[in-house]
Image (cartoon, rainbow, N blue to C red):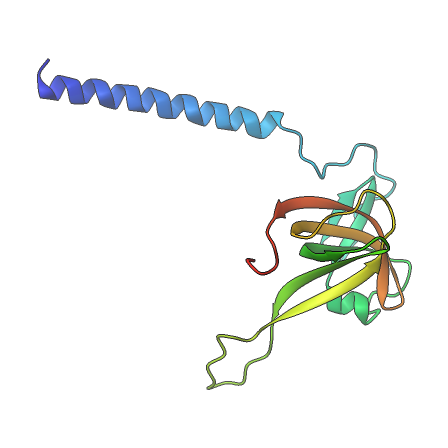
Length: 162
């Protein structure tokens, strides 16, 4: 077979394979259940004025560890702290953490200004995330902390690596 004919055949096979692969991936996106999708009807509409996630049929407004520790959202409010890493777990608590940027004065080089911010919550349920789990943590606020309602595991990455 001449070289040009062989190259044309390889090109057709590659195009066919690529098209089939894209079709399989697209089908997987629609067929694989999303782990954080609600299993039941919502009990209320998404709260106005916040970036909310649905979990267990309830809406949770996005928050930060600093906001929870400062009781900035009040008490008894449903909050989700997104993409935090479990840094420790005991029989009575779970500690989550995230690297947060510190302020940097203009004109200074501030490449090493990340600080590990953590939040420890009382959590005795058997189904708790483990160290290295990257999660969305859902809960109801209380003074300086929150009472966990559950979590969505997003990935695994020990805090030292992420």
